[in-house]
Length: 174
Image 1: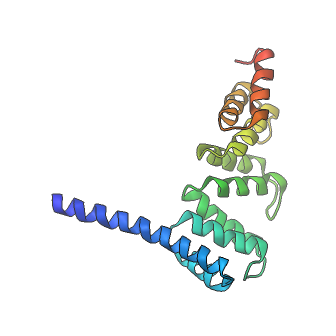
Image 2: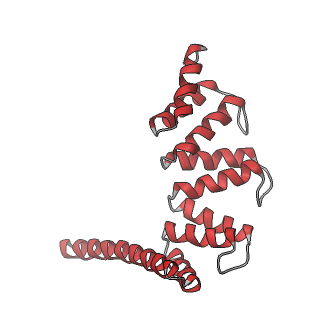
Image 3: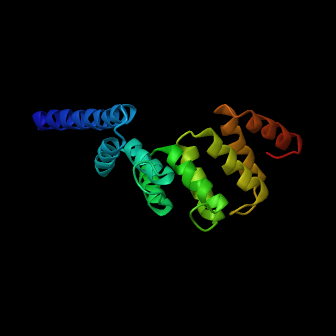
């Protein structure tokens, strides 16, 4: 049994290295001007559940790098990347729903993805999440929740978050 656990641990560690190697290889190919090969490497790594690779595929579809611009496909890959824990991809999706870029405006969905991004320590997402609660965008207005997330944004380095915490405190918000 102990031998089996050791083998499983080694396999898990090797798979992490394979993921990293795949992304590094894709970046290397991209830097050498081999964008098509890089895209293929990223797409294969994404299929193996590498969140960063999924984000690179999403950016290719979003910006038209080696493939035609296809915002719905970009959002599909950003969503996969977000679900795999890459907060910056969650922020991209949230901003898309907030602004109606490539999707219909949907403030509750934007709020959901701002929350996921904030949970992954994306400071700007925490700021947006707090703002949504402050003004009641996509959610019932709740300045206590807003203050909590402005504080998180502040702790993650967003100066405006610190300002809003102070402002809400002076207004008597707990």
